Image (cartoon, rainbow, N blue to C red; front, top):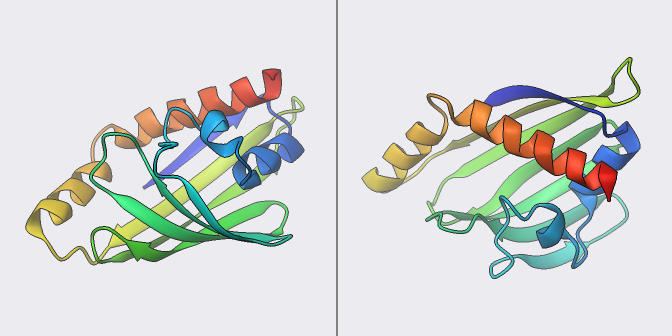
Amino acid sequence: MRFEVTTYTSPGQVLQALTDFTERRPRIWHQTLDPKTYELRELCATWAVARESTAGSPFWVVERYDWSDPSLVRWVDVETSWGGRGSGEVRIVPDEGGGSRIEAQWTNGGATRMRDKVLLWMLHQGPMDHVIARIRRKTLDEYARA
């Protein structure tokens, strides 16, 4: 999956929103992060490991996030409910208008059950990238207004 989002949120605010692993994280990402399953496992200055899922989704992941480069947040799946692995990144680019352009991409693969293979395929097809892009933009715009 790959998409770009333009937001009036500053690059610093985008980085803060993406790397806030406190109890605020489920509130910031309330449209896509289930607070019942969110669990911070490790946190350091430029990386974190967290268990995350979306409410109603059959999938959960334990991801290791890294933001040692402040313009790039990367993650790799350490553990998944589908038995496979994935990775992704969000590049934060300053926008001429003072906001940011977000360039996001990620992959998921290696599912072992047919149901999971089909659902992951569906996630990466059709309009899902547009839906997720809209949700990300809305979340970041809400974060900037808060």
